Image (cartoon, rainbow, N blue to C red):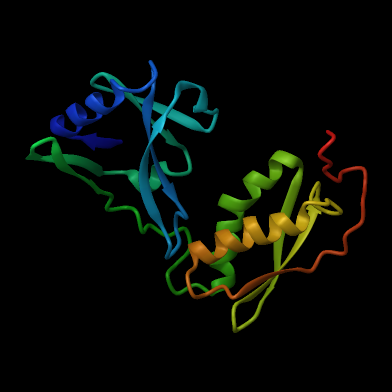
Length: 196
């Protein structure tokens, strides 16, 4: 999936030799399919690999890539240019990075809904929750409604501001002004509680 040149492999092997045994590297895409898309590389300890990841074997180390990032990393190339004196430059070229799940000229609401389904709701699902967009104003105010475990949850406002709003503003810079909770909150048997 990703081409890592020999020089880059050598660079990663040197870095990983100073980490805990079986530590690999994680290559990921954040905010895929949005104007705020970015790619990155992190250390990946063995215990941080999840069922959503695939492991790719390279010369002397593993590369871990989550399945959501993979379509955006097709034909990616990681290279390293040694400048001498222990310094160099790591380059990461990902031609599919700006791939869109919805057309570039699609309405903002369509783009936001696609992002919510791919990025926000899988996280909320860990607590049995879900969030849907009910309206998007011309000036970028996004109305959402929680259901399932998020409805009536005491952490809903934190999830809204620190999670959903922060993510949407980062993924759609300058397009999202505010995210507002339109939910009529009531505690039900599905409501997530910290005691669970």
